Amino acid sequence: MTITPVESIMATNPEHARLPVDPEFHYGAAFANGQYCDITKATVPLLDLGFNQADAAYDVVSVSKGYFFRLEDHLDRFDSACEKFLLTNPYSRQETIDILSELVRLSGTREAYVWWAVTRGLLRDSTRRTDPASYDHAFYAYAVPYKFISNDEQRARGIDVYVSKRYIRIPSKAVDPTAKNFHWMDLKLSLFEAGAAGKEWSVLCDQDGYLTEAPGTNLFIVKNGQVFTPGTGCLEGITRKSALELSRELGYPTWAAKVHVEQLYDADEAFMTSTAGGIMPINTADGHVLGGADGPGAITTRLHNLYWEKRWAGWHGTPVNYQRQRTA
Ligand SMILES: Cc1ncc(COP(=O)(O)O)c(C=O)c1O
Image (cartoon, rainbow, N blue to C red; front, side):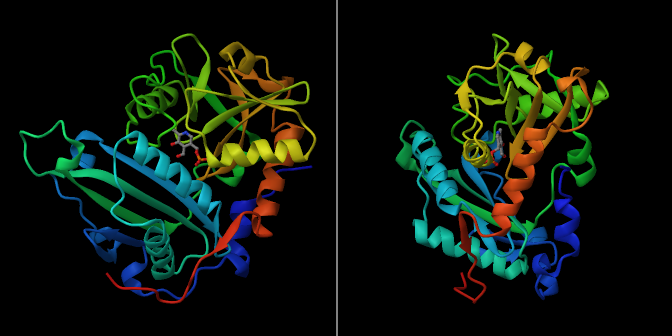
């Protein structure tokens, strides 16, 4: 079995094609400051604390063939992130769904990447910083055509990752990684470190050498037919959840537990998961060729292909409402 070239299928099969779109929304549609607009024109006030203090919760859901994937799971995770960060979404769940749906409709996308955030917004009275109620929380969202963070070629051959020597993932007691947040500097700088080492992706451990996650992705290893993912220190990814479900469906035992970096080097297979890329095989980790042979492993390949096969058949799908809903 080989890795299905899903990116090229999406680009060529009419079932995935973009709908007619107003040229204004060619690059995508945004919702900011209570208005829908061209994404290239959307602005954030400089005093919004989401912008200048990374004080926000966010989430990203994908759309394929005109269906949101696991929308309720993403909304639940977002609500929980807001609760953990003492943020209040100014919009109800239904209003949030309507805005996300309207953004997809405006951008004419049937394959979309849909992002939204609630920021701390503006502080009304600078002497009342200790009171969470003294901030006007703000909501932003956008929908753009779906872009893979790893392309067909990378997924077909497997990605060469670099385990950061310089950075650890920000500890959970500093910023809770289960609440999706804007603290990306450790992830970002580790990517540049990996690039300088000639690798295409980075992996971050905790201070004791246990795997946490990677920039924009969760991590998995496969050993002796069993599937392992770090249980703590990472975002509880929705694609991770899907990969765990699919593994069980295929009869592979799964574990969400501590995974040491040495277990990655010694793994039969490994892969990353993300809304922005699905299931992404790892080929080497710090030069260790996983499973002793180049290319994605058999279990990773099955999971990769099943993930897209099921999604395209409507698995956990919520249809986007392509009828005009509201104007802000
Ligand atoms: C830090 C981090 N970990 C993991 C993930 C994967 O999560 P999901 O599968 O929900 O996209 C993301 C997604 O952006 C992320 O930012």
